[in-house]
Picture 1 (cartoon, rainbow, N blue to C red):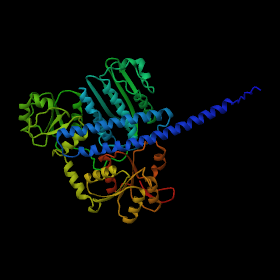
Picture 2 (picture 1 turned 60 degrees about the vertical axis):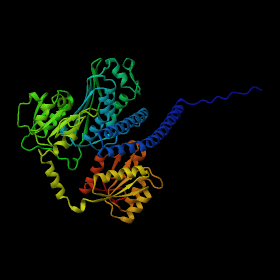
Picture 3 (picture 1 turned 120 degrees about the vertical axis):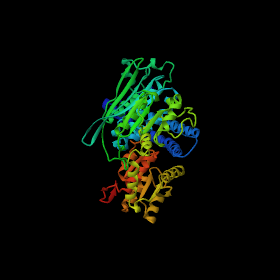
Picture 4 (picture 1 turned 90 degrees about the vertical axis):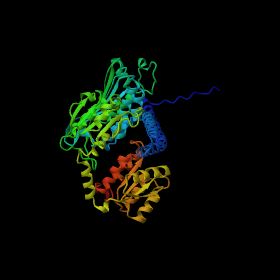
Length: 537
């Protein structure tokens, strides 16, 4: 007997619901795998980046310093590639989440530029930074991880498709509305450009232009589509303007809340209108020097040769290494007329500048960053900054200078790294714990900690649960979460309220020092949690 075929009819509406449910579940599982893989890859990578930063603060030979800088650049590049892949998967599933945190906008911009400086120099491209002095060491509320990812993509693309000329990175303050600032970011290159008809195509996910790729690395096709998605979610819009064969300008504008200024970061102000001579060509990378010096109260003389320098009452001198070499005798004559500690030579990282060519000088290595200019002129004796710092230290209550800090992490490398960073900053007594259970025991037994740095993912007892236990027991000391988790992960989103602050690994020296300053100045304010218990944020 022939077998009867059985047909099952599924109503279209039910089938659609099933498909959407299965698709949603599949995306959720995919994101879980991505989050786990991301954490496993980021953890050792962050240790490498943190140790490289620590080494950069040590005394070493110029060759060793260059090697360490390359380690830092390479690891940052690897992290950027990892972020691109993860962000592409999240963007496709609609899972990109923006989490604003207090961020030093100058520090973020400087780290971004430093990441690409060696690549630009290797291609013979001039990489110039121009940041508004009013943004210098200003804290804003922004998702720094995603903002840096956008900037990395834009500058990385500019370098990839520019063979000669220059790349300019601008961060301009367009205005302030109440407690918010409008910041306009732009990256301008003199590269091969894009045909107008292809601009929309490359802004789509995986979009690439065949003509642009001839004889060039293909890349992933991920960058600009991700940038567009992130910028839109941050409340801005990415604008791309390009002329084929002439270059490209990528820009976007964000309105960001201003948070409190960084402790001890009062603007540098010169005394008595000093005269500073800047002897360098007209390239854009030197413009930042003149801009910041004028903002700090100096009169600036900008010339392209010592032969054009007619004034004799110069208080400080900044000279490019190219002119210092070409006009060596004139340069030597001028350095003898100016006090030691007020003469800086701007050098490229891989230059063959002859040692001892010019005596009594300091060096500022490219890229020229506001923080480097600030540090040089702060100790020049032309401003009140040194006296102000001494006064602040004298006014600090002695009992607040030394902090007892508990560092909690299941990775011995991370424990050693953070302990070394804290000891490098100074005025701390560091105690270590390998998991959350140990942390709870140490806080309960010793009771005199001023601060806890708490990792998230740990065996036995993880960071959020350990923090919750301490809060439930009534401990109100500041607890700072440290995580390699992606900023949109469910675990991070659901537990962030337990911590006073969350730092993404690797936590840089600037971020760690800012936390210590907040503790010393009692800037973590108490709040009430859902259990009516006092916590601090």
